[in-house]
Amino acid sequence: MELKISIFGKTSDGEDVLLYNFLNEYIDVEILSYGGIIKSLKVPDRYGIFENVVLGYESFREYENDLCHHACITGRVAGRTKDAVLEINEKKYPLSKNNGKNNLHGGENTIHNRNWRACGEVVDNEGILTLETFSPHLEEGFPGNVEFKVIYRIQKNKLVIEYVGYPDRETYLNLTNHAYFNLSGNAKEKILFQEVLINGIGYGKVDNETLPVSVEKEDLFVKMSKYSKLNDIVKSKHSQVEIVGGGIDHPFILSKLDNYDVSLKDEKSGRVLFVKSDQPVAVIYTGNFLEEKYNGICFEMQDYPDIQNFMPTKIKIYNKSKPYQQNTEFLFDIL
Image (tube, rainbow, N blue to C red; front, top):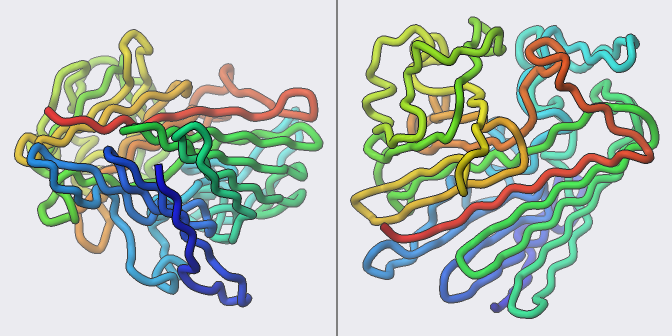
């Protein structure tokens, strides 16, 4: 495992943004100190050719102006919070509104677009990048001072992400990573002829604001535990496909009965991705509103979105004695 550290750019405040490049025979990944962004992730195809399978930008200024959350740590609360109100123990906290009347991914100015404290190292042939930042009480309206730590681990052909949040009072947290994957390599083709497999038991039916309103186990527009070609899904006339702009933008409730939760494969390149998490949900988004539509697909492994309205009995409140923890891994292989 090799580690190279360089300066990728400077923030508007003049801070150096560091780029950590971890490289072994299976994977070549670049991660920024800014937002914990996975700038690139190169893995081989069936012929051994390494290409980038994560969407991103060439310059830091593009990341600083990005509105699509490319491959960043996303939160404090991933997804949409209805009416931008978070309720903790019968106290209502008004949140910032950055998606119509709702809060999306924690707001406009939060952990995804700041420079984190970073430390990269190689230990026993494992690449480790530790990122830390502080989110003050009522930042974007969310309660609690929270110390966040996110650790990226590169282990052979696997990228593991560990999330921890230490609040000083009762609050709710739900982090994820918002990487857009495209297994064709260097985004030279759309994701439409790649295939997705979800080991789930149903999905969250969404309304016109893409808020989940009910759990659907029938009338599925995606096969469960079988590969579905994305082109077949986006071209279907299913109402849930049309309501989100022609594709997927839904939470899938995971069965947890298999060795992995979600898989994406590309027959042409031979690349396959397996995703496993300790979270109950995979929010899957097919880039329906990207500038280049269907250029990537997100697997946002997380808690139930808009949990206080969608699944109120399952909400977890975190505090000094109960920190937030989450683990997700991305394993790359060849068909």
